[in-house]
Length: 247
Image (cartoon, rainbow, N blue to C red; front, side, top):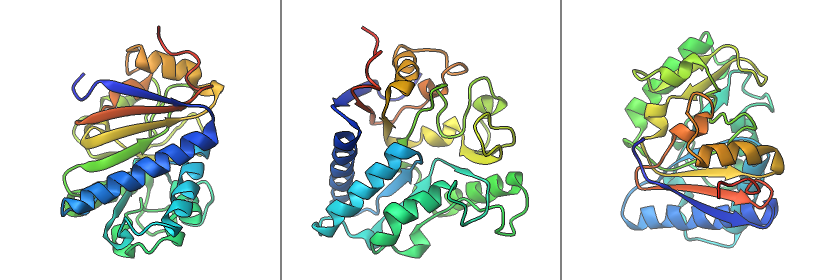
C-alpha cells in the first residue's frame, strides 16, 4: 500500500466532529489559496457530511479567509438518480453548503444525473472521467470520504468488480447493495491522487469497519483500506466510531 500512514483524531461526538472538520477544511482551503492555487476539494455524502457542510456554512458567514469563487468542488461518488433527487450527494451538499456560499458555478463539477440526457450510468461515468481529465488539477487537495458499516468507500463495495479496475478514472455501479443501485464512483487510482484524504466517520455502527480498516484488512473485504492520501491520511472519528480501534 502506497501513500501516507493513517493518523487518527477522535472527537467526543458527531457535532464536535463536524465543527472540527469544518474548521480544518476552511484552514486548508485558505492555505492552498495563499500558495496561489485554486483548491480542489472532493465532497462526500451521508449524515456526518451534512453536519460538516452545515458547520462550514456557519463558519463561512463570519470568515473571509476563503475566496469561495476560487474553489473547485468534486465528488468521490454519486447516485445515478434525477438531478433533484434528495438521494444525490450533490443535492445534500447544495442544500447545506454550496447554495449558501458564493461559488463559481463553473467550478462545481457534478456527476451527470439520470435525467441529464447523458444516457446510461456507464455514459455518466465516462463523462465524469472526462470532466476530471479536462478540468481537474491533477489531484485533489482534500478528499473527504465516508465509510459504510460494511467498509465500503465512495461506491466501492466489498468483493465488487470495481475494486480491481485500474484503467479508468470513474466506474459505473449497477448493483449497489445499498440503494439506490445505480451509481458512479471514482476508482482507487483517482481516489488516491489526493494530497490529503479525510475519512469522516460517526456512530458505533461504523466502529467495526473502522477498526478493521485501520487494522489493515484486505481491501476486497474492507474497501476503505485501499485509499490513502499522498501527503496525509486522516481518520476523523467520534468516540462511538472509534470504539473498536486496534490496540
